[in-house]
Length: 108
Image (cartoon, rainbow, N blue to C red; front, top):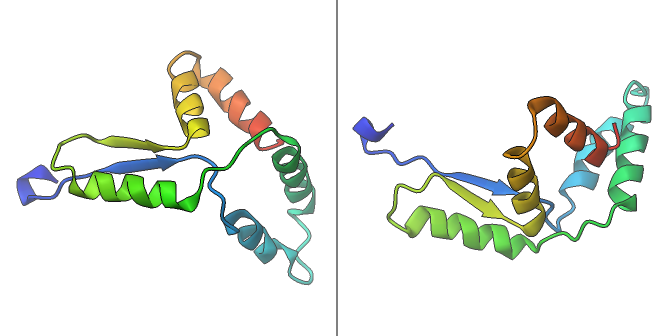
């Protein structure tokens, strides 16, 4: 995109203290839609049972603002300690191990 004067930035958030997850899962609770019930139950159990500490939504807003205004060609911006841990782990394990880690975090 650089030839067009467009800078690309990636903001990679971890768990953020919003109602996004519950609102997203509410869609799956519609009458007659039961195909995802087991997966949703596993995810909900894993998510609530974890020791995750969500970052405040303002953190993501601050990181987005930084990315948009810092005037650099930096590509990746990480928001949240858990996101930092996951990204750091990604560089230290195989793809299969990384996918297993993500599946475990999602209760799958």
